[in-house]
Amino acid sequence: MGDGAEAAGATAASRFGTICVFCGSNAGRRRVFGDAALDLGHELVRRGVDLVYGGGSIGLMGLIARTVLDGGRRVVGVIPRALMAVEISGESVGEVIVVQDMHERKAEMARRSKAFIALPGGYGTMEELLEMITWCQLGIHDKPVGLLNVDGYYDPLLALFDKGEAEGFINSDCRQIFVSAPTASELLTKMEQYTQLHQEVAPATSWEISELGYGRTPGADQS
Image (tube, rainbow, N blue to C red; front, top):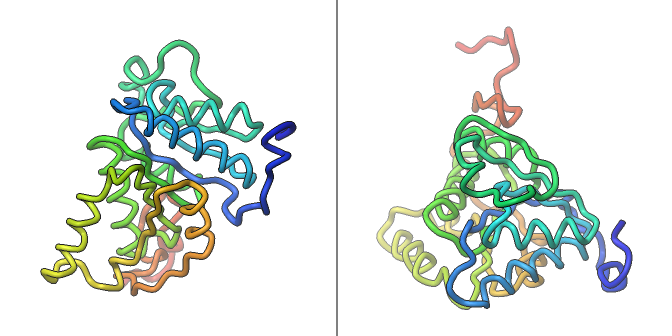
């Protein structure tokens, strides 16, 4: 596995064995978005990283999943049963885990991953990105979150975050929860170097989220 061109261009192994990528089930109107998905897929392969994603075979999801799988890495898709007919066209890519709803999907993707990256996408991608940022702020996880800002796609969102900080709704340390970059190589390098700086609202052990493996010890005093 991992032979050929990908292996020839291999870099040092990533500290993230598996990364979850959020992205659109559409490809976007410009080729730059598809190229970015392919580039990220190749970069994951070069760094020896497996992929967890939304399970679709179309749009940016399909592009990155096939790239990582063709590069010899493991690909696990997590998809709600209701979306299978919508987001899987023809054969599925890699392993597919079917869940009941969107909440279970995000929890399963998070549980299986050591970091998160958002490619361009629509409401669903942005919601997934923001939930992972929020979970980090709350202390539910301490995994790096990266935003691949392809051709400035997320500039308005980054400006909104800056506005939230300026107006006192986002703490300055929490503004640093995620990192962003215009290319896959730069983004992954930043994520490798990421150190948590913010003070979480509560430690992970205080959250009862069984899907993520968190929760109080059975029988422990919870008074």
